[in-house]
Length: 228
Image (cartoon, rainbow, N blue to C red):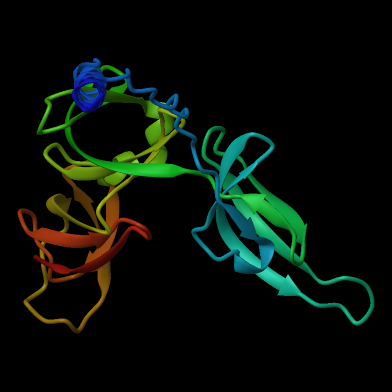
């Protein structure tokens, strides 16, 4: 009987190791990966109390830039914010009023630096110097900024929803005077005179500026700053 018990125990021991070995050899279960979530575009909301000059907001499905703002708190009634805004798409400037503390979506506008390379008919061609990809703006889109736009100038193109809506010139532009009356000495004192620069724009300059001089101009105001 003892021998039989020993044999039974050996068989049981063998079966345990056999099943354990089988479990170890069992192929691994396939991994169940969670489905990837779609990437969401985050839209940030602004409070009307945070509106400042230069703020980009989205109103009625279009991007707007705040040009002026005024927080008004009347003696009676609710406070509000009065703004003057420019539509990036149409170029129209309107006045809009928002209730104080109300929220509105911020327009997601990105900037890319491109170089103005040449003008093709009525289109202005800008190039990405890394990819050499060209972007074009119509003359109507460039507007008065063309007065200060010179070939080889780096500008910031503004994008909204994948389309170009505007561009920014450098604040200070350097242009050459091609026509003006002869200079009157090299003194800061004295009068002023008109001068035509290489882009065709006319600038009021000090009387000592001569043809061939390079001058610095504030592209936001069109005012002479100094000689380069």
